[in-house]
Image (cartoon, rainbow over all chains, first blue to last red; front, top):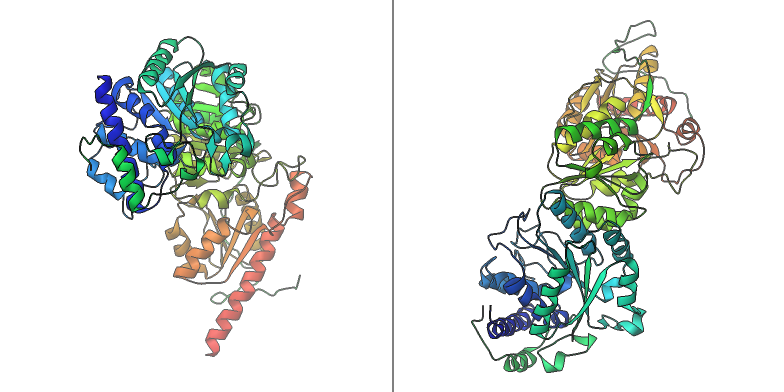
Length: 279
Length: 347
């Protein structure tokens, strides 16, 4: 897909995010906006995937979201790539909906393969799916996304140790390095230190990319694919701005889990003018 | 403990009356974890989708034969149980059937949230296989014993909870859960106990097994307490008391029909399990009784305490889990039943 077309989709996804969160007055806009370019690149350009959705996902690339609270961006991208009708986004976080606050399989929403929200579990699950692909002789990729704050969970490091030791080289994981978590900057809450050095020490092939530059995200993910199947799992450190695309939400942990009011919604939509078609 | 005179409502018996009791004998004693090891190998032979994961305890879990025959289908995770549960959940995507192996304590309490979110809530076809359950792993003491695992696992929606009674039944259960779709918690142990069930039995998940028919009291036992219940039943028969003994190998889904059918006849209940009295089999049975057919009930279980080091036999005795304690519980519940009968007859 052309870059300009992808940028239009990304803008529309950002509109979806702020409208969804505004509509139910809850949810997590900050990280969702920050990771929009990554999701759009992945679902509209990088991954070989089937929107008709089959849980086993044989012969297609799989994606796992470990920091499940940024569900709005995932739901929007899933709907807009054909997994379900975009009108269902209206039901986000509401009673009797498949579009739960955090991603879940329980209500049968197409595109979700495991629940996430309780942090730190997604890397293990992605490794499991990657191992099964290898056992089944399926040469597709497994992608996963993690928050940087999430790296404070111990299970991440159990998984980080396992994947290189067992040469899980069909796995391309990404960390959303926005430097923010609920209680403040990660450096202040519990500093993550040198992530490149840490993952390299564990045996990962570590790359970096700018998560708010679509072109760089595409370059990064394509390079990651070219590095796969060479004995090492791949970790991309993706620099993003929380709230990217809406100036008053950018760069602050304050918009981690807060919904915009009516005026703020109008202001945000005013900055996201390209409208393919709202749900 | 007070001496209790036992009288039964419908039957006047003396010690001379013969109480029929089905005979159970055994020629060898084995650990149930070895039944798991044998079952895992067989399940692996029957279905190539079966894979095994272990957190640095392959010897304790008796996984050696499976590993030898299917090295490419075995995954050594290291001492990282949370990661093991997550990997197992992920491996189901693409159709594999993962069996995880570690001690019961590290299979449940340590990884409750991983099981809850990635396995149970996500409806993943993972078999959580837990050895060294209860007090009877013995000398390692309370850090490695767990008496809360049945409660934790049965509270998870969609989880099947199985606690077989001997080597043969554990082997059969292991084979059966591979053929069942959905998350399962399979609980077994380390001590060697009598092998008294049939070697090639078919294991029916959720179907209680009537071990001995009786008329005076229903004893619902699980795990190796079934053998203690049989020993107790034989002694009770000598005392003129006819005990119905039912093996509840599947704690969830519970065979309510079998429980209510038995209770309709005996009108009183003793539950027996190697678990905390809070949240285990006894509480599941009590819930069935209170909502359907309230009758007197007594628990044989650990009385809301941690265990300690000791031999399995010493621990079973000290914490009230042997045949003698089952007999005492029967005596207490028969006294309550008699009190109830007398009360209603007076009205």
